[in-house]
Length: 215
Length: 243
Ligand SMILES: Nc1ncnc2c1ncn2[C@@H]1O[C@H](COP(=O)(O)OP(=O)(O)OP(=O)(O)O)[C@@H](O)[C@H]1O
Ligand SMILES: [Mg+2]
Image 1 (cartoon, helix red, strand yellow):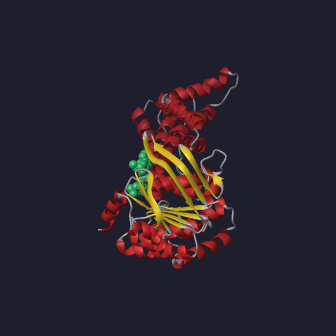
Image 2 (cartoon, each protein chain N blue to C red):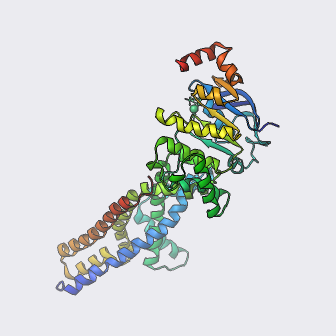
Image 3 (cartoon, rainbow over the protein chains, first blue to last red):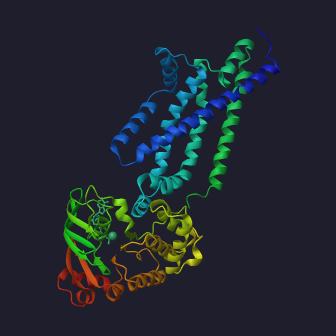
């Protein structure tokens, strides 16, 4: 056992960058795949819809922790050794894609059906309708739930600690094991999460106010 | 060959048959008004013509091309058939000019400059050349409907379908929209319009079609049909709308 030093605290807070990095990369990867899932879900082509629904149900119907293990150890089974960082970003991207895809589908469905008809009547293809008419309107409707999911994701990245990825929570565990000052350590960890999430919710409020996309 | 050839069309929603053997031909330059009670199938008929609704049997041909056929490119066909809806259905996130140029640049692949020139031309045609930058929510209902007409006109359609386009408007705004329609009629546009404006139908339409329970119950020259209804159904309908 040793004393908790300021450099410990500094190191702990600095680990937040890995929480942020994991979140940001997962959001990017998840948005890319999530956009595809959303499109598959809304185009009038039943097999595509079925694939998207299966994917969404698989991801939403299993615990994120289990997905993390499957990705991390799954590569090992096939003889590939992957780093915790790689496994965590991949697992959380796949996880985010299902949720974001479903959130955005909700946004698309909230756009009145008449907008589809009006754009179809001008001769637009389904993808052109989505790109120029539907998604711009769905976008604003989707901002609050999308950022809500980001906040949820920030907190869930703490699960990556179990495969040895050192982010905020794991850093807290390490410092606490050495100093046994759980209250100080974990309150600091919690405060760091809170700050990140608070910034995100503020961003949400701002974006919604300034983006006058769907008039 | 007529521009529109509708032959024995049957259309159902589930078990409910909404069009029950409708046949109708429309010549180029002709203006046909469709009247009838709510639920008689007027909107459905219009929506079948540009393929927004599939039909169960019969044929619809537009400009020699069969609408209800798997190898028809509906996107091509729809460029030649404009439709204007009761509720305008402008794109709320785009200004009037972009509402109009969208089909030109995205579907017809027209250069933006050329598309803007057309937008200005059609907005002038509907008397709104000073509203090109306005977003739909900044316009009155009558103005929105005129932009919607302009948006369809910009595609240079061979046929225009109008579905009760004045029904959602305050009475004092109906006139400006009817004026635009009258201008189109004068310019020789082929039009099918579902309307409750009997005076307008009488003065502008060449032919009048009365629909009843999914069938064309009566049709003929607009004045003759209105002045001398043959069936009790049309008589009672006219009685209910004129009073
Ligand atoms: N999408 C739909 N699904 C099921 N039934 C429908 C649908 N659209 C229309 N119908 C039904 O089809 C019938 C004809 O509808 P349609 O809209 O063509 O009538 P209409 O003559 O235009 O009436 P209105 O004057 O009220 O506009 C009605 O009984 C209506 O309830
Ligand atoms: Mg109708």
